[in-house]
Structure formats: structure tokens, C-alpha cells
Length: 319
Image (tube, rainbow, N blue to C red; front, side, top):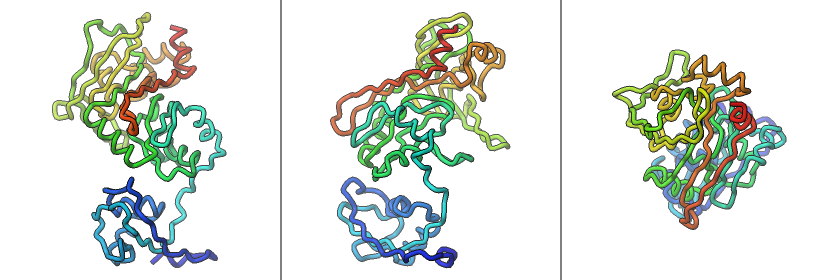
């Protein structure tokens, strides 16, 4: 197989034995191996499982086997393909993430994501927020996004530092115990009587591969609550609280209400955007202002707030 031929002058890797921590109980063995063998293709992982090279408590297992606390796993030596190297913490963009961290303990990390940074690499980007944070915290065994933000959106995003914390927060997302509030600057005068938008959303992929979302009867049920924060000449600053969590939900619901968000490259209004650029706005005016949740360790409600960046706050001053 291609993985063993180009070994170069490396010391041969050894068989590893890993004991499963209680925190990882319930995870499938195939997913566990993907985290242990970074850069190894999925096909290779299924092959070593099928051939019995991976053993759990000395026996063979199927890929869907769910780990139990204190399982002893034999991981064979696998040549890792030279994937994209992990970004170096020296990179300015990554180093600057440190100052964006709003809160961190042993379970969760809350960061004020800068606009223009994707939450994870892919789509032609070598790294995103999560890769940057992993490079910044090389000793952290576990770091996963709890939810996502669009690339152009800034603000609060949650990272789990334990699998149990990830499960706990996902459960809150499912049951509506997490409260997310966004600030958006929209075109025109948002009606004082409009407190919510309920409109089903459907994801479409254009021929170019670009994702666009539209209101459509056969879409998924979606709801966003709104309240007015500040009124300006020709624009309104609103607070949006998504009840469901669909892709581009707040952006498309604002457009559907007839009040698109300022400088939205996908769903914006050209004339309004030009006027806002005159005021110094050069990015989507959508910011995840606060997030409130039950802390996975204490079950107490905690709220985190992310300040607006200079571009957003200066735009408001100029209105």
C-alpha cells in the first residue's frame, strides 16, 4: 500500500495502547481512531478495523462499536500522509486570537470570532478558528466547535474542551436552553410591531458551488425573534434571537422582512450597502453579541458578551 513505501528515513512507528477515559465513553471506535490518527484517510481506518489490526481488550471490533470507560485499545503503526501542517502559533492571525478569548476554563472556551475568519478550514482556507485555537493550545487533548458562525459574522462562539461538555451543550441547543442574541444593522425602518419572522428555509447549492438559502414552502421550519435596539436615518439596529439554527437564518429572515442586513454580499441591497460603505462599513453588520447557557460543570446559567469591533461601533457613530 502507498502508505508504507515512502517511509523515508523515519524511525519505525510502534504499536500504541490507549486506555479510554470515562469522558470518551459512548464514542464510536471509527470516530475515535480518526482523532487519534490525524491525516489518515477514512478508508485506511476502516481497513485496519476490518483486518483486526485494531483491537479492543484484545478482541476485534466493528466500526460501529461504542467505546466504554477503561477499554484498552491497540492502535497499529500507520503512516500518516503529509497533510496540511498544523498552523504555527507564531502566525499573527492565530496569535491575535488569544486577545479575542472572552472566557476559558477546563470545560469551555468562549471567543469573540473576528469577521472574515471561517470557523474551520476547508473551502480553500488552510485553517479556520478551530485549527487556530488548537495551534494556540497544543496541550489541549480535545477542542471542538459547539456551533458555527458564518465566516463574515463576528462574535460569541463556544468551544468544548471535553467531550462531556460538548454533549451537554449540544443537548442545550436541541432543547432550547441556550440563548443566542445577535446585533444586526438593517436597511430601512424596522416595524415596531414586528417581533418575529417565521418562514421555512431551504438550502440551495448554485452551480458555482456557492450556498444560497431561500424562503420556500418545502424548507425547514425556521423562526427568529427581533427587537429594535436603535433607530437611525434609513437604518435600524435590531437584536435578533434565532429560535432555530438554520444556515444564514438571520440574514435571510431580515431580507424576507424587507430589511436586509448592511453589507451582506449574498442577501444585501446594493444601494443601502453603498451608503453604509460611505460610513466606513466594509463587512457584514451581523455580530453574535451574547450567548447564555447552563455551564456544563455547575449547571448554573452563565452569559458571555462580545464587544463590537471598531468597524461596527464606528459605523454606528457615523450614522
